[in-house]
Image 1 (cartoon, helix red, strand yellow):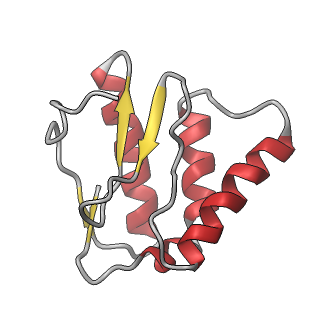
Image 2 (cartoon, helix red, strand yellow):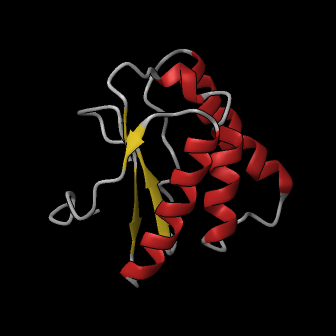
Image 3 (cartoon, helix red, strand yellow):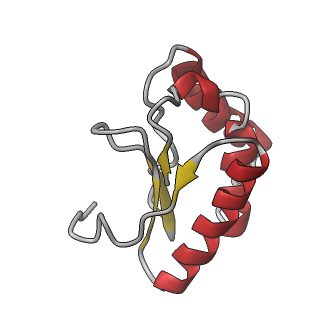
Amino acid sequence: MVLNTRTEYQELAEVFPELLKLFLEETDQVPEDPEIMQMFIHLNQMDLEANRKPEGYNRKGRMRLIFPTNRMEFYVKGSSKSGEVVRVAEKISKMLTKNGFEHELEWNTLSCLEL
């Protein structure tokens, strides 16, 4: 998801908890311990509120939520079915639209990137 060029990281702080929960629920990666979930949210929130690029969710697992350093965007990286990546990305896109974030979905622009 490429965010509008006028968007700053700190603007995502308000919706990031919802975004991360949606991502983790849709990818069946919700931590069993609620304190771990709060830690993921808190660490990302600190960066976002300081207008810095957040970590996202870059742990080993079926999918990752990646914030690259080169532009205002983030993407979903899957280790298996591309159809699942599409489904999750579209759900996140709908959530962003509902919350007033202008963005564009770009497909396969990072397919050469290996994590």
